[in-house]
Image (cartoon, rainbow, N blue to C red; front, side, top):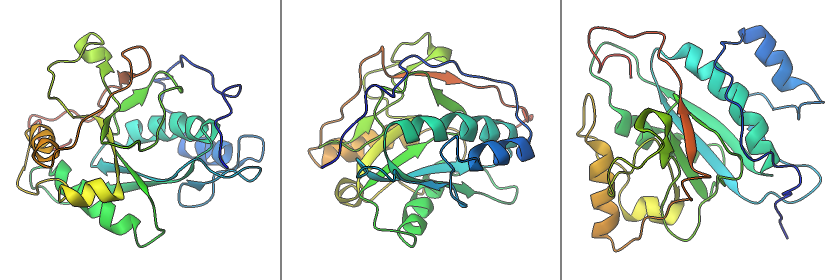
Length: 230
């Protein structure tokens, strides 16, 4: 049996947007007091059965400061939710336009070399959840987690959006054949993902606007080309 220790959940969270030093963060994440995250971004509860075995996949390029903030915030939250999880950072090298969707697909394939995950969360590094009651699991249908982002006034920009952070079971991700690899540069892959879900008769679910709140943290490497550093 698994359970959620709702007593350990905080609810609304403060998002610290200061950039931690890497050495300090490593020390904090590896301390026994703070849950001792294992090398490689892996953790699971030792006193109960994990609720979910989950791979969290992040597409990445030139977002070092955001990644440090993300890791500092996410590990404690995921531990409080009693998850057996590993964070995968999939980095794109070179100067070609960023291909977020392809990195997600690569992350999915690579994660299965580590363990037989039954839940996959695809997550942008610049989005940080503001409530730990927003469950990072995979229900019976694909789930859009980041429904209320501060950049959009904590409102859903349009009904069919499926960007930022979302979850799939292994069965559903393979049913829709993952993301399209054809989207280079800014945007498009999210709308295509929604169409893939609808085409297979799946229903997109979402948390409430209260629980699905996210802070978009600033990009420290803004360039003349918006595609380059996504």
